[in-house]
Length: 231
Length: 106
Image 1: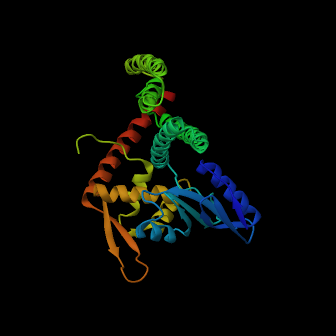
Image 2: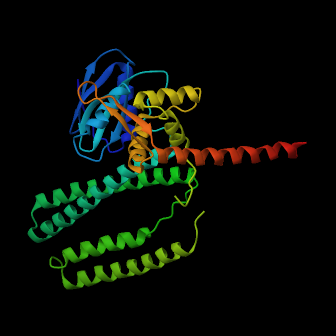
Image 3: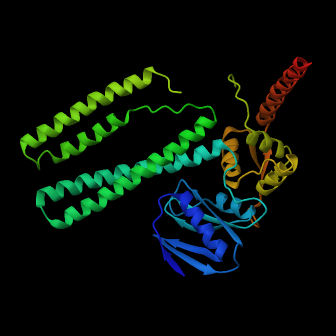
């Protein structure tokens, strides 16, 4: 049986994979959103998802280590590793302490951060192309990329929240270094500069004044955050 | 090693479990036994910790059977032993001082 789903949140994905396994549908392969299930004994397997430093590969070390622990590597997709283990007394969890949990979520968040930035750059380029040529398909790509940017921005923030909560538990106060306003202003600045040639002078000046105002507010808030400690 | 940082439970128990050569599964098993099931070492946690400890030089690879199953065993190093000893002393100090709390009760 093949099912198509697009998951950005690995925690939700794990819940779904385990729900399927509970019914007897065991994932055997994952490729680009297509989940291949094989029917078997209900509730036999438990699934987990890890993230690796590489893409589509894991070290021999890792592979052997997992094998020893009775954990099977089901599928590799990008940096994601789908694992499974025969159900045992304890729930299948990969991380048993906050330190390693934070490490794992940080890897995930950093990956999402990079993807978001790449998507934003692509969106800016599509915007330029759309405005300059006026062709419909560029506008369509713009819409799709815009949606993707929002999706990845959202998951980046949500993962960050998880990290902040975990660090809080460890007594580490997670302070935002750069105010959100400043970050948005810098982003808009980049987009405005890219669009400079494609829009009228008036429009560009209007946009830029807006960007500068946002930057001023953002810098003010960043400096203020630095001087106050957060509880 | 100027600034002394307390060891996490995970690191403490891994170091303890490789006082004699031990491999991944063996470590998980021993920790579960020693803590009577309280600490169930996650595979991801253990893998990451072993990498980190090896990098820090607190544990080292003891044996590696290249041919067959490539059963990688780890063993604590001299540095690891010193770190563990320091932690033991810290814990003893804590426990000693903890007894003061009972004195206040009476």
